[in-house]
Length: 187
Image (cartoon, rainbow, N blue to C red; front, side):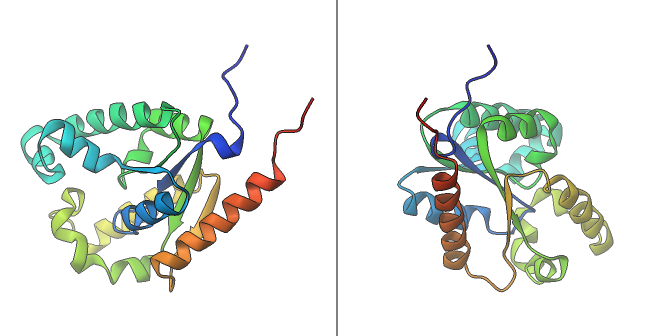
């Protein structure tokens, strides 16, 4: 017997996308609208280890952070209590995380064009350890590299020119349509 297949309505929703794209803002409102708990993986790591993510990077290194991230993400994605889970921007680069996310969750990629994202850089750069000491060209290369990986999803939402409420409304209507179309049929 293979792994249990969950109907769409009974799957966790995982938000992926580049850092600063709005996963936490969208995720918390989406969870509220769907009456689910919201889990932000970075916040869960900070709670568990009593350290801020930038401090973990600085004191323990990125490799250790990625191990924490993998363990925390896999644990939450396999938890069957219905949730909306927001991943850190680099988490989805880990094959183990991608595999678990895609096998039993609905993975939604929040997509923002490079030009729109670049406009947010000043607001987010200080809180993102991965961006420290990188030139704009290096950041763009990282953006392009991760953009390909984010294409492995259940569906994608363009967020340019949309506020958080518009993105959430779009996701909710898409999910409800999917849930109606793919209802398990009685045998």
